[in-house]
Image 1 (cartoon, rainbow, N blue to C red):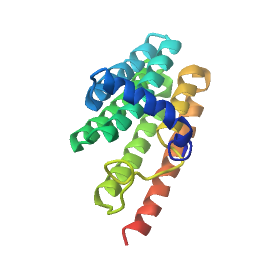
Image 2 (spheres, rainbow, N blue to C red):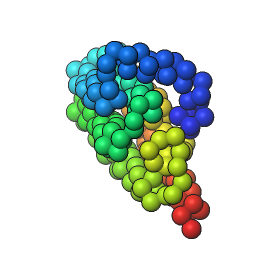
Image 3 (cartoon, rainbow, N blue to C red):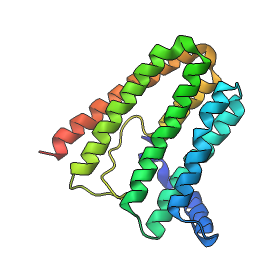
Image 4 (cartoon, rainbow, N blue to C red):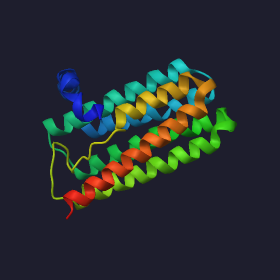
Length: 193
């Protein structure tokens, strides 16, 4: 929801960063890989009890993830870049979930269910993007929903910071992801008639 509706407010900053990185000689795919390396360390910081660093690398990777897409649109977007971007985004999320699961074994069931809901929501999202004739700014149709990447980062941040309430927050995240999956499925039925 925030990615869809609030992006216009931060896009000038993202655009400026994208232009600076392009002038520095970096490609969109290189920034995607950089965001992946930085973001996937978040789970390690969670596991080793370093929540500040876990959040710092998570949000830096999220920012670079927004910048790489703008870089691609300023140059020449590629299908492979889209695959890298979406795949690496999921690995970053998985690293946080796995880090939390190892650090807080009592939360493993909730974290497993969260993983299932993310898989379900992303399956619908990617399938609709692949089969839809609708186009957007991105290289495929981007379905909005209650839980987009920014909401996920906010919820992951709460999970990392408020570990005394980890199970409750994880179940809340699970419910929001399921709701988003149903939103996307309902929209798919409408647009794919």
